[in-house]
Image (cartoon, rainbow, N blue to C red; front, side):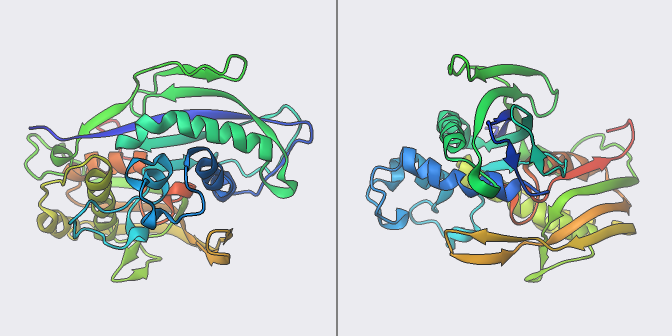
Length: 326
């Protein structure tokens, strides 16, 4: 039985209100900031109760999206904070901070697995967040439009406009058989010996319990496998049957031949934890050399779902360049 891994991408267009918008250079945290509390307000029936103790959590959209819990009897990722959330707010790479009234801002919302069915809640939450305001001085915006974008072919279609506030049903999701994507038994693996990879947003990868500043290829593969297998388990309901040991062993033979990355410090305030958090990571380019063919599909999936910590803020966005062959 084929186990599919499903991803949907939506481009949201925000229109600055009468006061314009004042946003930081990296907008991932700002977009995520008030979004969670707004989502909870529209979806939660018992707001004064913690999700873990709530009798309604098994049927609550907020609990599933923001407080994903392990299935009953599961031993996988018992720590709630380690479970990846099934969405990514992918901010624009532009660093401008001031938007004039009526000016538009575009960013991507990526939904994974079962979360795709909760799209209407995301739409209502961003519409409500526009009325509350975001960024410095909490200036208002309008959710002007949403376009469904196929993550691979880039075909797109408008599914929502502010003028009529109707959500159109468009099927532009992408499905992949993750077990074939990360398999050493793929026939006719292309002979790719060298790739260049860019960490486009701050990327936080852990190896041996420490965040790394020099990303060897096996470290990248370990983090990708961990994230993809967790997303499959918690948000698709199945566990990938992968040769993790073999994949990591072969990844360790791939060499890092050029490292043009740098560490960027970034601090954000968490209202939930009432504290400032340091979420720095690496940005820049690396080049890897070795037997890379079997890893290209895995890396392509990583381009869609990001890699490392803080993906919900748009961190860990990667792009690979390996010539016309892939």
